[in-house]
Amino acid sequence: MIEQPAFGRRLRQLRVQRGLSQTELAGDEVSASYVSRVESGRRSPNELIAAFFARRLDVPLEALTNPASQDDAGHRSRRLDIAGRLLEARALRKDRELADAARLLRGIGEAAGGHAEEDVLWEATWELADVLRELGDTAEEHAVLTGLAETALSQETPRLAARVATALSENLRRQGRLGEAVRAAEHAVSVTVTLQPTAHERVTAMLALIHAYIDSGELTNAAILADTFEEIVEDIPSRQLCGQVYWAAGSARFQCGRPEDGVRLHEQAFACLRPDVNLAAWARLCRASAALHLEYDASDSSTKHAELLLTRARQALELVGRNEDLAHLVLAEAQLALRQGKPEQVLELTDRAHAFGAALNLAGQGQCHLLAAHAHTRTGDMTAARESYRLAAETLDRAGAYRKSAEAWRQLSEILAAGPGGGPAAVTD
Figure 1 (cartoon, rainbow, N blue to C red):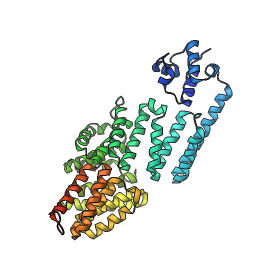
Figure 2 (tube, rainbow, N blue to C red):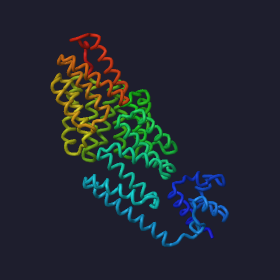
Figure 3 (cartoon, helix red, strand yellow):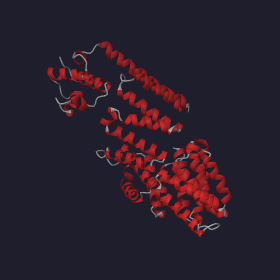
Figure 4 (cartoon, rainbow, N blue to C red):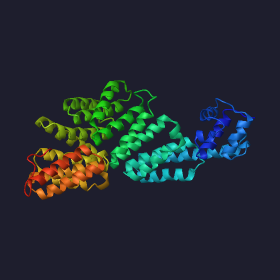
């Protein structure tokens, strides 16, 4: 006798264990939507269809209609074991024992294989990707997220699919693979079209997309997304998420030549991202806002404001910042030194930034070479300036930051055209 919803739960469990999609299980006999209804308990199959499912899964019919109680007990035991180890990993992560947390989370996946409850295993794998991000292991994080995107649970659940695609976009952006980052974020946005405009997954997907657009120089698309953000931001229930939206929209306005709007939006971001609530996010906003002031507003008041923001950022990031935060902070401090006419200090700071190694992504490395090139030009060392402009242009090209790479190529061509001992008439800060 076929009893629902027990039959549907067992059918889904066995299908997932074998790595089959609903379409693959359906074959030519039934539709994927019919399989979905059976698995949810909304449809009860007859004996012939039940036997068909058993053949497709290569199990006896009794495995679907009357699974042994000890088998259910075994699944429950495995589920509880995974949940217990997941809680232990989270405790280790809270204590900042990140390497130990990662080892424990990897062990969950290796031990579970195809027999674990997919939802708990998905959660453990997602936690592993997050820990790897904190460890700075971009390559393994990418591999884990790619595998997570291919799971049945991710493919069948838009919110989970969006979360994974958004995280993949951020990972690719940190690697400097900006074209791929844009495509991953566009996919994340596309799978959230059925959600409310202010749903968390949809907003975070759009945040990943606007950041990828900005970094890759697709400023027209970034401006369009900034318009959308300004339309919806007041309806977003999370104050922290509102702050992230104001921050991203403001950054787009700065880079699209509207610094007044950028300042206004960043002020609203600061009102949401208070240091007593999230010190790390507030400090990153201080650093990012200072860098944009220095790049797009040449006034003395803007320089002084940027200096204040960087002082605040350093005080906080020395307490809570990751290596990548500190690397980009040093870059912003080099921008400030260049604005203040201190080229020797710029070169010292760019050397410190390079010393962070992989913590500084490709775009950051290119920016580092560009700042050094400006400093060498200021000191009159045109041989070093030519080499730094060349490295900047090539690195920014590899990062997909084509707008900034074009600037570096232009300035290099001006130096070469001027001949030995010559240089650009002016240096762009």
